[in-house]
Length: 111
Length: 117
Image 1 (cartoon, each protein chain N blue to C red):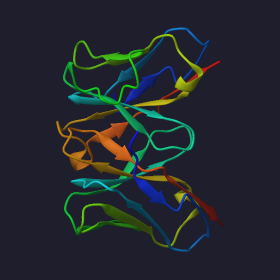
Image 2 (image 1 turned 135 degrees about the vertical axis):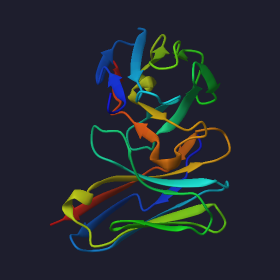
Image 3 (image 1 turned 180 degrees about the vertical axis):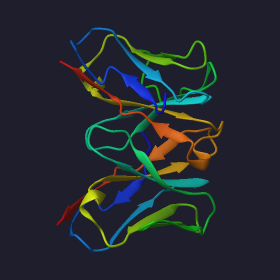
Image 4 (image 1 turned 60 degrees about the vertical axis):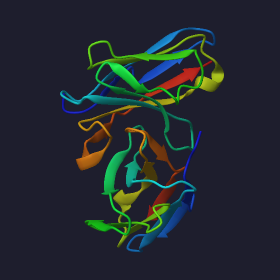
């Protein structure tokens, strides 16, 4: 099925470092979302972006909705061990509540 | 309940058997979604209910897959004649908003891990 292009696939960083990941699409989305998934759990919403160009923060997380509505990035500042997990971007179009997800970025943080 | 509940959490079945996966959404959430997540991939949309009716079932891979939500709350995903390729985590989510996850209203359950042997 259709998926967004998310990069990088995985990251290994030192505690305290900043992290950046991004997502691109060939289609326009009206809403971009970023989720985190821990093993054995469902994705948990981190940030939602509703307008092109919007920049939104949630604690150490910052995300932006690209002007073209075809891309988004997520930054995590001053990473800590509990940031470990898989991060997914997701786009919501005009088709009801159907989300299109990226392939995920697996983040590992070394203490 | 406080969150989206999915049962069973794990299901192992033999190829060719029939399985049912259950989702209890957050009380009062009118929209319910099923997704399938294969290993190393993001969730893929299967079907979306608004109330009792399937508003969008375009993600169901074939006619072996069917889902119901007869009273507008609990939903059951049914898979007939299971195949090894059906092995995945099946995620359910619910939302207060008709058009999706506005206002942080889209909450996922922990999923059912289905293994077909």
